[in-house]
Amino acid sequence: MAAIVTQDLVKVFGGVRAVDGLNLTVAEGTVFGFLGPNGAGKTTTIRMLTGMAVPTAGNAEVAGVRLGVDGAVRAKVGYLPEEPAFYPWMNPLEFLDHVGRLFGLDPATRKERANRLLEQVGLTYVAKRRIGGFSRGMRQRLGLAQALINQPEVLFLDEPVSALDPAGRKEVLDLIDGLRGKCTIFMSTHILADVERVCDTVGIIDRGRLVEEANQAELLKRYTVPAFEVECESGSEELFTAWLQHLGQLNWVVSIQPEGNSARVVVNDMNLARMSFLSEAAGAHLPLRRYEVVTPSLEDVFLRLVSESHGKTS
Image (tube, rainbow, N blue to C red; front, top):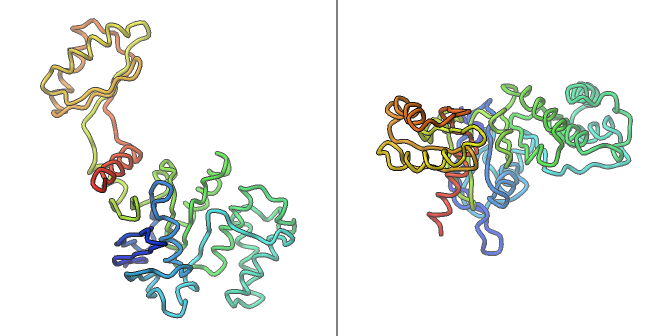
């Protein structure tokens, strides 16, 4: 069952199509990574899906509710903006109680959920401390707690770790990973390593248009390029350069990207390359420090797809 479905979703600001005919389907219970360069339309999409902005055209359904139906979708979603805002004079318990009131929760439920969520995000020890003195990481964790106070069916996270230090990023990503299966998570980001770590499915957006959408493993497999990375011993750079020039003349080599004393070699026949690579190096008396088959990263796929997207629209 789909938790989010969009059909030709469009948002125009002053003649600029920030979101341009977006068609998405996000499966229930998954962690969906929404990727794109800055300004690609990620935040605008989230604002429409949470009912905070009205689409210019198109339709969308979130948690079984069609957008525009009396704001009913807001009761079914949680939202953590990139920079969550708080009342600095409140403490976390007071703030979560306030948010619970906005959702119409009774006093007993508000108290139980506030205490449980503060424990879940690791803020019990500052439950009665003023929020104004919190670090960015603590504020992000509190923001995640407020986004969960209504037990949402779909949780929207807009760049949840972009401004955090490595320790803060790990804390928030661990929390997101712990929510897997408890609700559908729609996470926008431009930090690809975070998506590789926690997301099941990936959607890539650029200039308001969906470039690709697929399961992460399927995406990597689909855009796998048969390639090797090789690195020579220090002091062998001159011999290495000559060897690379020789490789470039072989019919199973497609391209070579040298960088210092290493290189990426793209081939068209992996089996032939495996059999020939080391013998070619031995024949040239080249001492290799490293030789390995390259596994594409999500960053490789992302950069390729965005580059191709720019080529199509330029």
